[in-house]
Length: 70
Image (cartoon, rainbow, N blue to C red; front, top):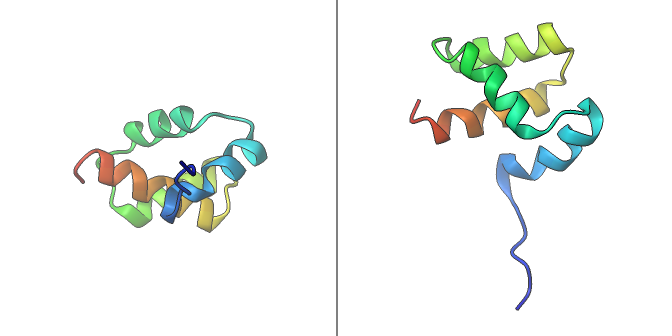
């Protein structure tokens, strides 16, 4: 059986790990620290504190919020 292709925001995860040198779990822990912020405030946090690109930050926040019912 063919392996299911990852789509949506999680499809960015391999390039996020490669570019920033941290596993996705690291970014989920960072977002947990700012879980009370709104979606775009969390995106801004990743962009400002870690110089992350908008697309990568948005993908991480989207998945974090979905997994945590936010």
